Image 1 (tube, helix red, strand yellow):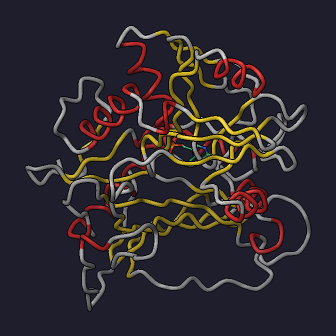
Image 2 (cartoon, rainbow, N blue to C red; image 1 turned 180 degrees about the vertical axis):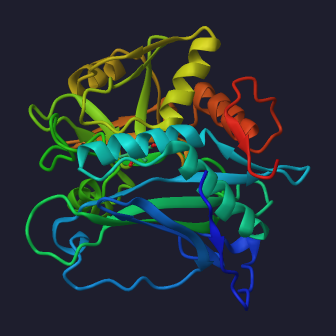
Length: 356
Ligand SMILES: *Cc1c(COP(=O)(O)O)cnc(C)c1O
């Protein structure tokens, strides 16, 4: 159990118009912080007014990027309960990431307590319009003032909160995807499975290239052969071919998504054939030519399910399901969002109440 000190903000900010919410541009009144010092462990857990962080210019995070982050959401139900969706998985993944980039482990129960506490303090910021939620961003940075390359001895764990709007304002429109054959996101043995900033810095170039060409996201191929499909943008990816639903297996270069895991469980329970295995871009195009490709969609916390309508691989354009949302993507979206906001019974015990 953490003994969290709470310092409330003396003036509260004006809440934004819930109809105008975007993503990640507005922050709540408070934040959670906890420090780590070698020999002392994680110390001084506190909730303070949302404020700037003062660090030495030599703080290690600025130079070698030793940082991790997570992303999850809190949802307001019709009966004004506030629910988190599978937060234990995000916290477990925090320790998987930490392990890979030499950040000390966190106590999982303590981090869950911290998330609940900060959301409780700023609970008036959890919006209630359909599709809206409070995005929760826990992250850890290395703070030693030191320029040598080694794991840091001092860290800060912070949690900030941001009310976010409905991802699909004009309905779920399938996105256009650029298959990237020059740049890669991650390789086996690297940090692709870890939620660390390095992966995102490395992805920007291809993302810009896709944008310039008029595409929304990048489809990443494996870093060795540029042949096997890995992820789409910052989402995991699923394909329905001949009735079989395929998602790339987790072999070190793919981020193990909470949404991905939830989708696999649901599909299995719906008695659909779901396989975690390698799928090459050639086999995908072949399946399409033979009329066997039924659906493509991405999965992640931000959009939940994001249908793909078109792929472009070296100029070869492939239209999926006439550019329309498929029935599997639709059913998954309705089910997961229903559980998240409490309109569908949570038979999996996926949700956790903030205010018991
Ligand atoms: C966060 C993330 C995902 C999705 O994970 P969720 O837990 O479902 O939000 C997928 N791929 C990448 C690269 C990510 O950063």
